[in-house]
Length: 468
Ligand code: 2HG
Ligand code: ZN
Image 1 (cartoon, rainbow, N blue to C red):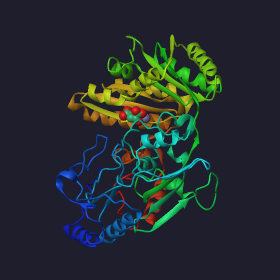
Image 2 (cartoon, rainbow, N blue to C red):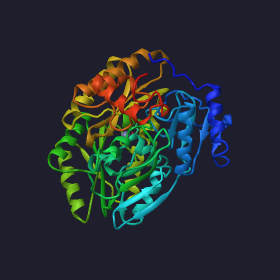
Image 3 (tube, protein in one colour):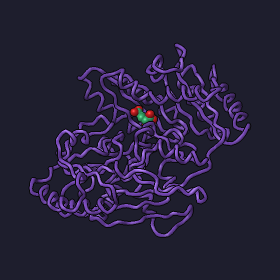
Image 4 (cartoon, helix red, strand yellow):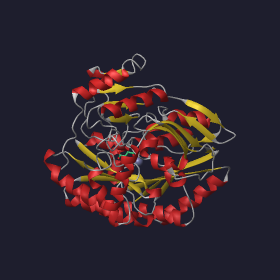
């Protein structure tokens, strides 16, 4: 078990206050307890920790000042976006200073001709979608929290979402960033062009580094033309294995739906009656599929894909005929996680990913692990890229040890099938002790050395990704 991280001494905190107080505009640095309390947790379900200070800068220069002073005073800094993370990445484990980028909002430059947009980290993802779509452009990543998550947090965690199977995760769309190192150095990393191979891919390294290497203060994203036709359908299957066969058949036949979301019986039960969409009783699995492109061809392809789903065992395919029907289907998908949380006293949602061919074995393995440990479970998620949300659910507080065993077994299952312990939520705090199940000691040691190079004082998001 990891020992708790030491909190900064009162003297270090005073040194930081003294360094920043006269140099930051009024209101940027706060320490009122009621406010600090709202910056201690995220959506991982992990216990919150109270920070000692909160900084809400509005410029890159302020971020640089804050980091340089925190490095000098040896005060831990936990960068924070919208607080929607699922792995505890934004929890200030060692107290210290929470650096919230929420006030650095908005678009800096949208360049439709170059297919790029430069944004500040505090921009809400849903607002970016609306702004670029108004220009008939498309930014595909769509994590479930899109109405509240911030671009900076998406970049820090390399967020995914349903459309990642076709379009990739956040990293696949980031051309460059402006980042501030722990010592306050401001760097422009990467490029503004669609192509460019100069030097190491440090943009790729910073994306997904979960606030441990640098603080992102600006992001340049690649945009695509907005598909003009989107077709959505829900296929019902008698069991989850038939649905998994459907996923493989559709992809093997050469189709790349922009979403291929699977829900097992427990997931369907959790949303039945809670959304506008009337899920019939007794359905044991469903696939929400969506195709995009241009013109009538998309609808024709949907017919072919629906036929493949039927051949795999789907007994009904319901095609959304209007925008409101599409929204009903997606509404049901988007409330899965909160509905499961409401249905049980406790919920752990792992986000393992496996090679596509291993999806059936993975689903079978998840159900077997939960049954063995006497836990309820629901499996759903982004089957199109093999990323399955294995939810363990229980009400009895005495189930702690069974849950711990089940979590390890889930990770071993994923890794044993050639997969990963996290497809999209990140390692953060909640999975740091399990990283060695997937990565060798030499690989973890190399990453620790990289961390030391970027952040020699070790102030940036301590206690995340690696065990203490
Ligand atoms: C989703 O796909 C999110 O809905 C949340 O990644 C997953 O909490 C979950 O189960
Ligand atoms: Zn997800």
